[in-house]
Length: 113
Image 1: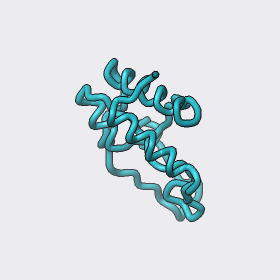
Image 2: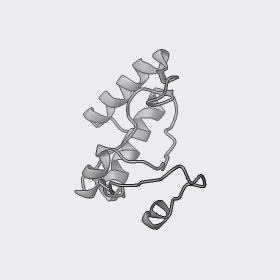
Image 3: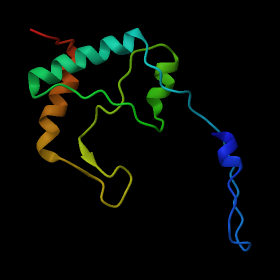
């Protein structure tokens, strides 16, 4: 990826491309503890409304640092919605009680009945 970014060049001679910075987050590789946490969250979500969909997306968050320490962590436990950091960003207000119940259920360790 670094080679691709370093190889970027403008096609217009009046334009220059400069890429600086670097990688500042380790990859998020959930271990066994993170898997157990997801199973718990999935069980809680199933009791509330529906099972969770396990997603793997690009990008990075503070959860990357936690996972790198070998600690269980889930990313994306906040409000549902769309358009993160965009003009059309929004949350689905009707989903908020379920999201609060999910977080509380995970914190209390409420798994399958």
